[in-house]
Every structure is written in structure tokens, then in C-alpha cells.
Amino acid sequence: MVTVKQSTAEVKELSQCLLVKWNHAMPLPSAFQSELQRWMNYWKRQLPISASSVTSLLTFHADATFFPNLRELLKILAVLPVGSVEAERSFSCLRRIHNWLRNTMATEKLSDLAVIAMHGHEVPISKADICKRYMDLHPR
Image (tube, rainbow, N blue to C red; front, side):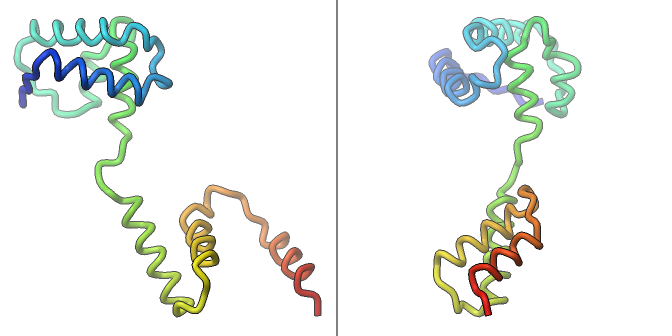
């Protein structure tokens, strides 16, 4: 188990940052400071245990009645990406577009194609509508 001891000022500063960043996700943001104090006191009284994961903290220690805000923050922590997968995916996507089109396009078109390639699965796109729009813009 890793034990981290921080000063009261450091904890207060960290809690302010968390409150600013995640207050929209907290059920009771006004009670976050007192809840954090209860959480710290709770862990001072506990025997040293090995919390192997965030999910074990959620399951056994972060009770929704006593620690609703911290429970929500731990849920968020459980699903945050650990690495830089999104950035790596966008770079590989740009590389694929560059190779395919051999750098023969303007920056705006490259940017638009990159957005479509990276986030196109999130937006329903009808191929028939795209073809119709293209034919309307470029009649023969």
C-alpha cells in the first residue's frame, strides 16, 4: 500500500482544484470540503489495507450515503484514460490521410477530413445525402 501524506494547505488546494473542475458532476458540491475531511479522518482510523484499484475503493469504502461527492469523483477516476491514446489515434489518422492524398490538399480540407476520420463514427452520415449534395454542387 502506498501512503501519501500531504499538508493541510496542499489538500485544501487540491480540493479547490477538484471542486472547480468537477463540481458539475458532484451531487452536493457545497458539502465537498466537509466530506473530504470525513474521508481523511476515516482513513486515519482504518488499518493499513491494500486498495488494489479504484473499483475496490468504490465497492468497500466510498459509501454513497456518507461520501456522495467522493464516490462520484472515484467513478470518474475509474473511467479516465490513463495514457494518450486519443492523441496517438489522431496522429495515426493524420498520417493515413496524408499518405492517401499525398499532401495535395489545402489545410482546411485536411482538417475537415481529419475530423471526419476521427469522429465520423459519432455522427450519423448518410452517404446518399453526401452524393446528392455533391451532384447538386457540381452538375454535369
